[in-house]
Image 1: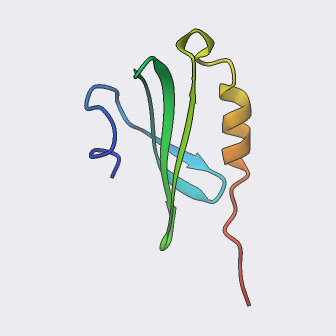
Image 2: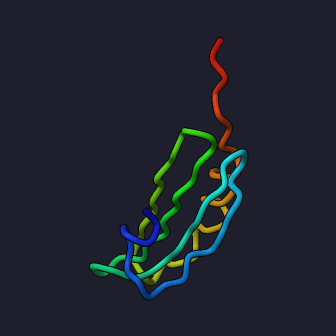
Length: 77
């Protein structure tokens, strides 16, 4: 999905977000700065996005990375 759902130019980088692993990329499209993640753990997949004005690109990176780093799969009985 990472190859199909975003522009072909920006590189995809492997990331670990809490218990989930996958890929992320960032780019500017439609006058917005986008960060996108495709994450998975077993059969659960998460597609997460964040966007802002390009002049604020990177301003919230640490907070968004911290939030995604807290991802845990809920275990049901």
